[in-house]
Length: 199
Length: 199
Image 1 (cartoon, rainbow over the protein chains, first blue to last red):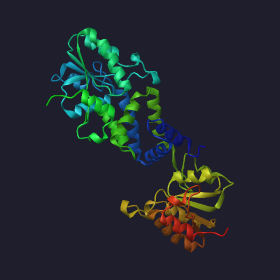
Image 2: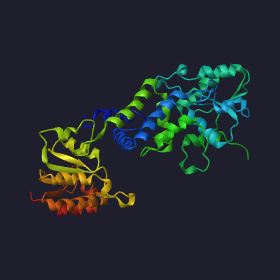
Image 3: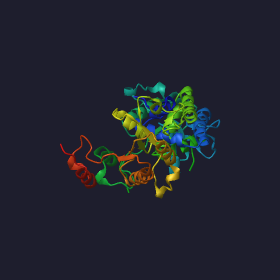
Image 4: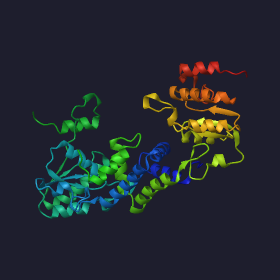
């Protein structure tokens, strides 16, 4: 049942198509946009077009950038010999926030997922192999999520990289800093025991 | 700390300014928009501009419309003698869904809220009074939400309307249909008792 004017229904549908936004939330967002001053609604629309047209993948690491190459690849202080492989651009942000990592990245733009028909060819894996084949790389850190799909993807890529005699590592599994043993699940505790280190 | 390209940061900020959308959700939405095909991103932006430019308030009832007057006010079968006063355009949808109400509406576009500096002059109250003063109206149903602000607004407006010798009513308070007495709060139960009717 459509009661709102067609152009408002259309805007509600656009919002409802966004991930995690239901019909009710979409209505609320659309009403909010209508309540904005003309100039702000225009700058919202312009922001979508501007981001869509100017943001593209860095030709080296496939992270999102609006420059020729991304700020990390451009930075001469970053160690080009270590590549941290992540699934999504937002994962790069998580590492950058820790301010500890000094290497570069490679963004896969997803993980292998047979359920969703995402295979190796849908990810930026061949680009990673080309970088490794270039010869400059000493270590590849697999930093996909510690779930079935992330593990499978990491395993698949590590097999492709092995022939190049490059060290392949995986992020450590274990108890998160500041958490409580009481709430740690069995799988995490098992991995934390396996990965224990001498003090 | 800004790590994303400026145009992407800008889009994230736009999404984060929407009600109920936090920074993380805004990032997810912005990434989703970037992953859309060019044409869909453009039609999203166009939907915002189109809705903003074509949708305006009905000059009679102040509901949102893209026509000269809204579909309810235009409908000759609707009883122009009864006005249901609601706070928001979405409340009209709720009544229309019940398919029971045959009168017309008046949308206030908010409720009086001293905390948020919203007074009577910020609402479409003078427009309502003009309609009532027109002489055609027999009854005004106050259908603002049953909370402090909604009640205050209803009370304020009913005092303004009284001098015109027009019947002013308020939606019934009581137990929602299909709910459980166990979960009804005291205030609702008290109102349900007060408003009891002979069977």
